[in-house]
Length: 280
Image (cartoon, rainbow, N blue to C red; front, side):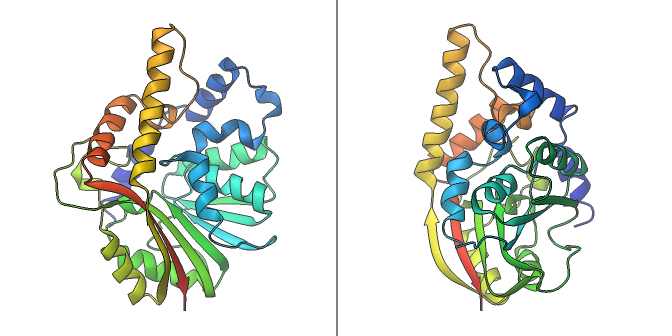
């Protein structure tokens, strides 16, 4: 794993990302000197379905105010901020990419959520947290970069209290078929570890989780990317800059990544899938 992680971290690096985000928001008329968490939603929810998908996933956890939630693969902090803001919980995010950790902390400070969120650099497969540290955990579009699903599940089980919920929302493989790269999570096949729902279920069961709910979100995914393409096309036709979106985080080849993942989604090879797991 040690050989894979530096390449994955580099895949997500976008130079000057925070400055680019703030500039794009200012261009769109946002008062960046008085930023609110909601102003960032189009950019910092780096997964299919955006903030609406986060909300639907979180609604299934049953979080109580003051609970301690772990966000595995927290990126630039969007889901962590959304949950801290909407559910009144304390969120700890862990991410492999140091610049994402730094940006997540900075953006949380800008929107007044520094006291409800904290971010640390580290591996999901070897987390720097004590046993039974958290009341719940979530992972959104991260497992595709993790080669060892059993280790992910055993680490999540270790840091969660008994009875806790682990909400998984990952892109999974539903049938055989070649994938074309780059994809949003991988420049090439050496950093993509897309697995089947059965792989996740087996790994979860071995770690002591039971599956309480499962839902494929393929239709949502196809609609999400169609809407994104339509917005880009409209902006182009009108000679305007597109409104700030995930393309900022995806970097220079964002359109190629979107086209490749859309082809796999429309072909039924991949789909985002929700799994709600409870630690027995």
